[in-house]
Image (tube, rainbow, N blue to C red; front, side, top):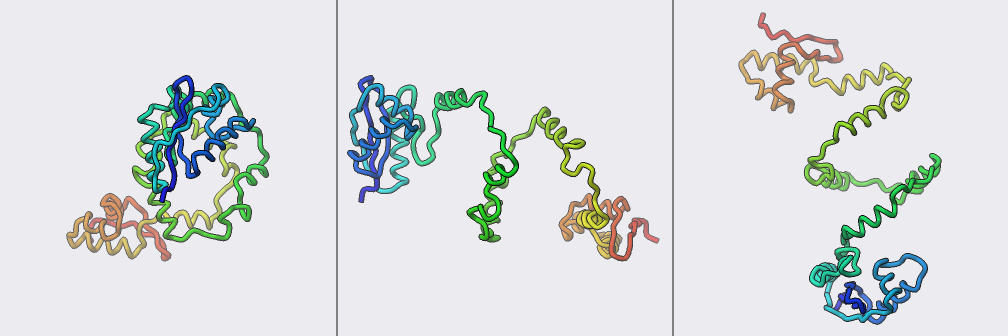
Length: 262
């Protein structure tokens, strides 16, 4: 069963436009002609402008496809084969479901938006725009652990859009200045004793018992690398604990490990 078809439109000036449709070609042609007469920006702007200027083009079916994937691939193929991207033709995208804008189209879009500023919004308008709380489509439907894991995996390593990129010095200075003095969201506030204890506990690597065990194993000749592996830390961390360069706390107080046997 035919899923859709690829067609071309040829104008008197020799330029072409390639499109896809799941309708009968005659119906799609009528849609194009209606869009070109509309005052609203619908469909391909370059193609609609060409119809207004040159009149109705000659439409020809190029091929059919049995699936959406096949149809998208066919559109990309024919646009490239016939060279219909602007300015040679009237296609502003490379085709397919996620076609990219041509270089000329990007430049025109950039020029059109140059100097434009976002209108000022009140905090309430910003919250409404972001659709927080009950206005959010996902409200009351928390993502499962599996879904969160998939989202995280999709953003790690070379899959991340910032992978391999580094901020230049100018941006680093700008980010720093945004956090200084009164601009800092924590300006004028202090951590409570309870919060300090929680942060301190989170940074601790070992309990008092852990340090005693590390000293025992080290004293028996076990390598720091082997000890580090069992605690899932670096050998440097084990070395600091053994040599007393890291104060290790427990509920019973604090100890400073002494590497020298008594």
